[in-house]
Length: 362
Image 1: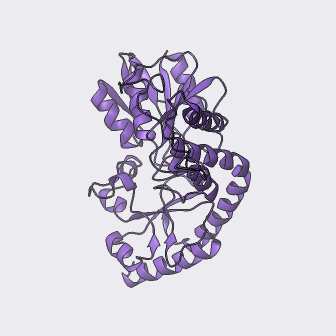
Image 2: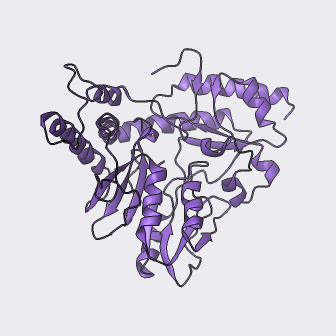
Image 3: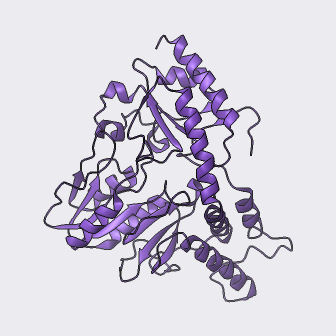
């Protein structure tokens, strides 16, 4: 998949739609015979066909999760995380890592008592720290969206069990790329693994009961709203493809990472180099004017941080959590690449970015 004149290196923000996912979606927009638009909650033939497509997709999405749980479709990971945090109803404190997405941090704070778990300068949430005595839910993401660091979720899952707390994982950046960790609840978003935007899921372990937060029909049992067969079919196709291509994709991305590290060898890497998903390169140079850099390299699509907060003007809470100053955080850029990124695109982007940084004298 190529780009006419733009080089796309922002895979943490969103990924290109897989052709296979697009094809799966078209059948349920209207279909070749015009009968693919049925409501999956209707009992007639068109409704049953749409419902069958959703259940096929559910099985495909579930195939990348641990056994013994249920997939609940949502509008995306933000809704899934809200459902998990607000719906768990433990009554205890929610402990979450300092580098969680705001969908976790803001929701935990709004839901009641919350507690922040510290991270190291390498960008990992160390297990050797206390949680509150009344902890009811622990939330630690598997792969960080800004710096790509992989968290010790196996250890945090064990701590949650020892403290009788539920364990929630934001696996948005992990699902379809690496084996998803064990947890009580896991949130994902389709557009991060080459599916469509507007659909995600919450995986809920058997035995975990959540309170419905969105009422009005209970179509998903603990989640109301008419499901979109097109979006969900696209998500299912993307999940199926990710499962088939996981090793191939990982090998391709490793090659891109190695080349990118060579091309940006005189930049400082933010976060661990080893405990990291190698499709995320977050780097900095002292004195860099990132806004100017992005303007000078306008045909290279990269990020100055999380896409969700890019317009806020706030310093990255993730980079501050690993010990960077406001100035260092604002000297940082994030390059994200994946399945459809060509080596030549990495090389062309590096040439443009390095030349533009040199023009700034940094």
